[in-house]
Image (tube, rainbow, N blue to C red; front, side, top):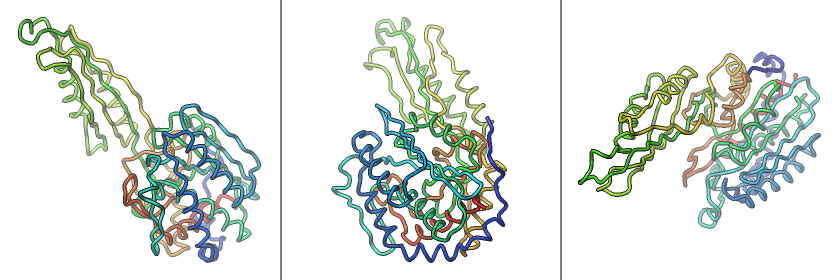
Length: 397
């Protein structure tokens, strides 16, 4: 499926924007930017707590109305199992249309703030979820505000907020794909990678291989049994041998379980598998490996369950074009904006699979995703908000 809006502007489109002036404006509002992140991060939004997710989304919508005004259109998708999805459309005075992706759920359980409150120490702001990825959304909002304050034309903006990214986006995926279709570009506000934006991400597969054998007494009648553990062990060897680091493909059996007692030939066994692939070709090869798994003993059987949780995000010409815009915006700000390919996946993978220009990693500069040392740079937030202003502004020319 391929659908791209207008062609991505040439890097020179950034040159007509007063990015140094926007950065100065953002610097003058530094305290407000910090206050927004402190308030947002002080509202816990674990992926598995529907009440807290709802409260977090309500906080966000109120803050967005205050910072950006009321949207021209609001679509709320409610879920009974996961965090809701909110799509907000803001009109522009330029010809383009850009989608901004941000998830509001975090990996941190309810109560984490009790022992780890949000703190600001000089240029460092720390707290649960600030790096992944609450700072990113705050930067996006202030980037739009800076663009407006400068009087520069802006494209129409669609902001997509989802509350299940950290668990694979099971509810939000089709909604994200629908919201992104037809846009000129998709900007993803996941955290940066050591300051680099992300122009390629691996696809992720989550699979279970189940073996069913025949139970028997291991001492009295072993010949009457067909060991499920033997079958799963053979499958594990095959799966791990499918790893090809040069290709960018990894297959990891991370969980293995089976059997009931040491003196019983195992009747059942199971392996949980994480697969990462850099290319569509690599994905197809792993599909063939999984399809080829079969039982060694004819009395046993092998079943493969699961799916590709996120498609591959390959560095396409469209992605290269939007990165060139970001790089030029960085040059105007006197900042190097490197690019990187990473093994982790995000909601940007869904948009990239539609053939859209995607740029990921536009969020915080910092470190510690999913770790107790999670933190962001405040000066980095100001810098990245200015970069985002330039990137969005280029689509409004």
